[in-house]
Amino acid sequence: PWYVMLLRSFLQVECGLARRQITLLIDQGKVFVNQKIVESYKSELYEGDCVQIPSLEIDKAFHFGGQNVDKDPALVLFNKPKWYTCSKADPHNQVFYDLLPQKFRKYYYIGRLDKESRGLMFLTSKPELVHQFEHPSKEIEKSYLVQLDKPFDRKLKNKILAGIFEWGEFLRTKQLEKSDFWLLEITLNEGKKRHIRRIFKALGYVVTDLQRIRIGSYCLGSLPEGKWKFLD
Image (cartoon, rainbow, N blue to C red; front, side, top):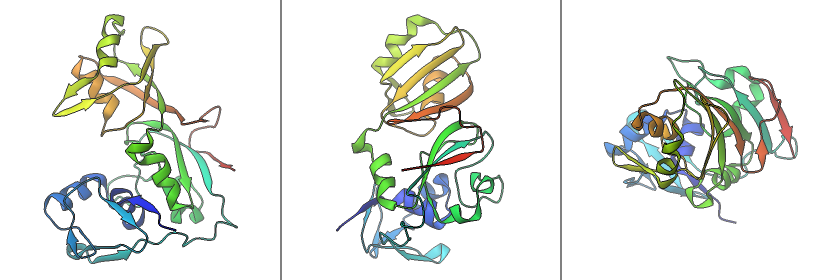
């Protein structure tokens, strides 16, 4: 069978590169797949593709099924606290893998959150699940609790649902509900960089707390921060 994975996800989880670093390397023409320069941030990898970044001495092939999934759970639900980055290694910040048993270092992560955000993420021993959850074509819903620095003006709800154009990108929102004057629940089926924070910044708000509470049909529930549980 032929399996697909986003190149960006492969470079993050297998090579330990930060998203900003990956963007810079692609812009500079330093990333190659099967000896061809990568020109798109949305490039995909197929079974057997070879990834090279000569400047970093990276030369890896993408292969599905390199781990024993009979012994390892396929999916792990994790509640990421604030101030941990989504990376396997970061010289300047703590990474969320530091909160997990050593065996999880070989797992792929699904549902990247920025350092200032917290909440639901997945870890998986199956690389095809990364594609299933993260590829834009899947349009997996993700829900968040958003706390603002001042009461939300309900007149802005329709504007947000119509989409916010910010710095050359159209930021879409699928659902928006107000829990109280300061707290909202927002649902997306896409995820651009700092998507929610940029929406509210464009409208004159500051997001003071951002917590993901759902990915698809999986909910965070009462799982404490920094803890995990196995899923079937």
